[in-house]
Image 1 (tube, helix red, strand yellow):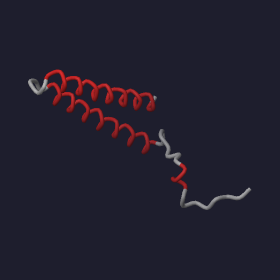
Image 2 (cartoon, rainbow, N blue to C red; image 1 turned 120 degrees about the vertical axis):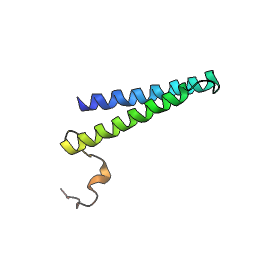
Image 3 (cartoon, one colour; image 1 turned 135 degrees about the horizontal axis):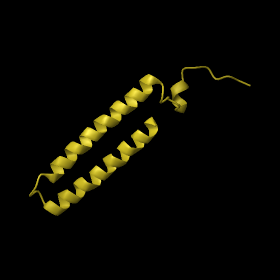
Image 4 (cartoon, helix red, strand yellow; image 1 turned 180 degrees about the horizontal axis):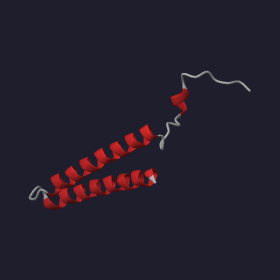
Amino acid sequence: MLKIIIVVLLIAIVLSLFSGAVFFFKDQGSTKRTLYALGVRITLAILLMLTITYGIFTGQLALNAPWHHAGQPIQQP
């Protein structure tokens, strides 16, 4: 469930980015819609960071990167 929320937030951030670009080129600075889209994008990014932090602290998300276990000795078969 948490991974679905993360994907939805990422998609919303990308959509907000593209809508801000459209507002920027269409309005030519005459309205504040670009600034509003930036505020929405920042809010979504903060929610994304909080969601990922929550997932790591609760154990629902794990660090599985190859370099994460670099300090541990390699076991030979």
